[in-house]
Length: 98
Image (cartoon, rainbow, N blue to C red; front, side):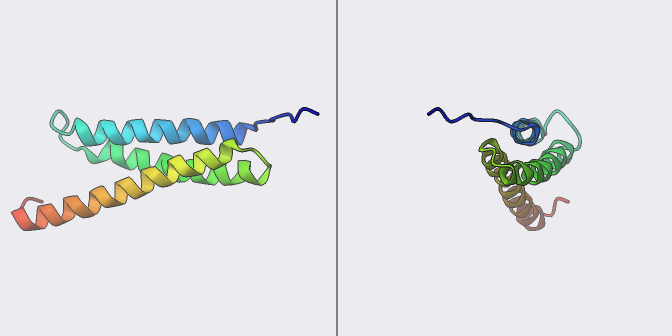
């Protein structure tokens, strides 16, 4: 007997937001020399990561496996953003640039 994989809108949306959050994070991080304030892309990526985790949780509750991947992507964005902020803060304090 075949098992149907029914994917909810929450699961698909959480994956899309997770991927979009990663893209915005990397745009904000790598292209900082062209923009005066690089934190905008990282902040939007962080917010989309939180939303991806929430929607992924709802999808996982409904039995959708895509929700698990949305949670993974959202968590990855949040961890990378926190590490970047901590390393940037330490570097800024040591060099005197704020």
